[in-house]
Length: 391
Image (cartoon, rainbow, N blue to C red; front, side):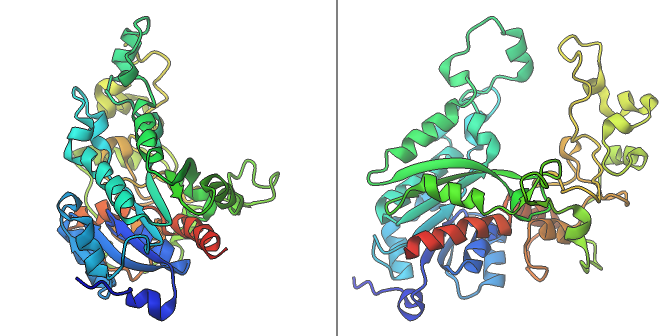
């Protein structure tokens, strides 16, 4: 079989990117903006692949489970030999490691997805790979023990698998075992890079060419925004707020889901508020047992759970967008209207272009956007990566 050089590589001389677990293309758009050429995308979800094809019809989209796609088949499709790919990006799902009552870990299909990411890195030998995931991955235990169980077992020593951070420790070991790569990681807040959203992501970089530690340091040093409490002191601009982000957005359709019956309480919550701002007479009805302060395990903790019945503020960045704005514990209600954020508002807060065509049901659109890395954060990572590749 004859494998020819990628047309994109030979014609434009641009660095190539192989994208895994692509979803709505948030990471990909950031890399495109920084000057990279996306030569391959993959996702198991039909609606994600239809979205990729609708917006980037010339980019190869391989629909299916990456577990069933051999590496040599990927290389054949894109016309590249191994060692010729510049960057691999992706955020494989890791939920399987922290499922209550069980520990399927790497034997679970979602855990195997991480191993497949590592498999493709090993077999294609890119100059750089970038793995991204939720910041909470850093502290996840391999074996889930609920908060209340931990309190009850305070004096009992937890097993290594039950300790916070045990999952990421193993993931890091697996990445560090890839021969020829230096690996480092950090937690980046999208708000520091001009995204109107307090969204922290774990970014892990592996490189054959240069120090990933210096790359991460340079990315952080390039951040020009900061928490308003310290922005002036550190000579940076204040975080962008919701009002600034949604200014001028044309959204005639206002496509969104509806809140369940509990949404009736939201009309009593002020902008920037949550369940603690409900009249006292309503709090227990709205929250049920979660507001029970007589429970000794909840004593002094009634001010928590700030995601419940949450209404956003115009004057602050949005909290982290999740895969649905209508979950009671991670509620994302519009500042003035008694509705969740629309699909277009969601997309704007993740810095997708206003004309980006998300294909699928409303729930599927929320999921694609909520799972994405914000485009501006991806661009910040990609820009430094591009500079280092060119040195």
